[in-house]
Length: 427
Image (tube, rainbow, N blue to C red; front, side, top):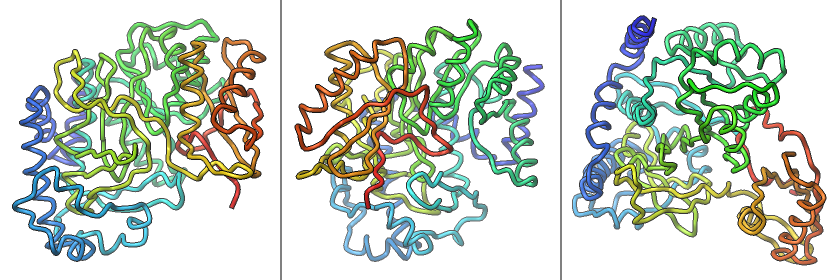
């Protein structure tokens, strides 16, 4: 049966994009390359991308007009202007250079921060994007054709649904995006044959909560991967009880590609062969080195991150490590007098974890200036005590400028959008 699925997958892969195998082979070859070799490869690919963008992309002709690309170093990259989300939406047509590529693959963002962005990847871009995922799987002894459970939404249009089901068949996966007990119970039938589980972090957590509640335990799962949403520390405990694993992270975005993949030692290694990551004022800026059809150069993704510059992972890989994705950059938290960055919430709950040893899954909501509501997912803790800790830590940062309140809930409803730490309804 495994051979059958391997053959079916390889046929499907060749039909979709025959460049994937070559890209995967290249990424495996550089998996343990030196840091210097990886940087040299980055510079070579950066110059190629910049030359292409300057020649064929109307948007970048002006931006790169005065740049001497041939003499550039990696450090010189920060002299180029950043690319904002509004640039992507407002200048989609002028950024694109689609006519210069034989075949293109349609892609779109989830639209979690507004309207969905539609753009087109070249075969090379798509190949390296997928190869980055497959290399990450290989770290856990997994092949892309292995049986898997996939938590993700799909378009209910019947023609689109037929295509999705066909792709799921080729990928040997069972797809789900419903959380009622009847649907979750269906998943149980497939778990014993599965090798890995992936999808929205909150959806995977909901499954593990159900399995824990019904006293199920599985040792055949080699990887539980959360993506597109924040992975709260509290998720790991439940996943470990059910699968003897922590929830691993794949970090990226449709328009930026796979930025980092977590190794079995628990560190997120940047895919340096595919992207260049800069951090300015704790904000991540990404350049995708294969994005020739829609150049992504110094893109402000919208996340706060903590880097592990110089950190040496015990797995032996020299790729730069992202220690933590600390939160989404969004609207300010508004007090009666002052305003505060949403990153403040990260520190409030990080302090609680460090001082009291309690990991909390949280979500901040503001509907009125000077008032902030915390939604906290229930777990095995004393709610009265936890409420006291939150109010105490919150006061350290906001003082009397913001009146905080706490609501304990069974789970945060995500409804097909990325998890944010904070949402404001104040115009």
